[in-house]
Image (tube, rainbow, N blue to C red):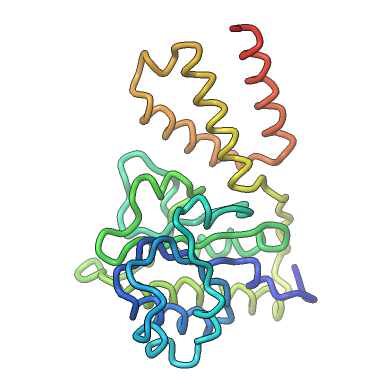
Length: 246
């Protein structure tokens, strides 16, 4: 495992459509206390904001360096693996696991990969369109009687669990897991667009519900964790199909 560089620098925390600026400031404080520094904001409702700065309580540098983007796709450029956080399991979705299990799995990835931790809007959480970009979904094991967490509390817990993996790996020399470098989100998204185009050209999407089928195909390929050579092979096959049907 990494010792010379800080593996936490390979994680980016992405907040989608945040309604309240105070939650952005509190989240910045939460991630900084755990050693994280990279904050991405997708279409925040109100930011920059004096209220965000006030609740950051010394994490002003995190807010100053925060990357503000108009779409989740922009926030995921260069990302190799995305974890979405949601309290409930969806009907058609990725594996849904406890944050401690997730932390054990994703921490070794940071040696060679850029990892995104994705949080949704305070009221509605992650949308189905946002979830489709995730390799896995994770949840915080809160009380079933009252499981509601403030956004910054959720960020704090998630970052703490990953930070504990740092301590385990560096201090106890636990079994090292070799993780390959996965293909980036934008390259993978290009493959999905190419696949959808070919399926549409051959008339396959017209026979069934196109949106639902593409969602299932995304889930299937996300479970595989394709590398760059595998994506190139698949896109080569798609290109040959396009030549034949022309």
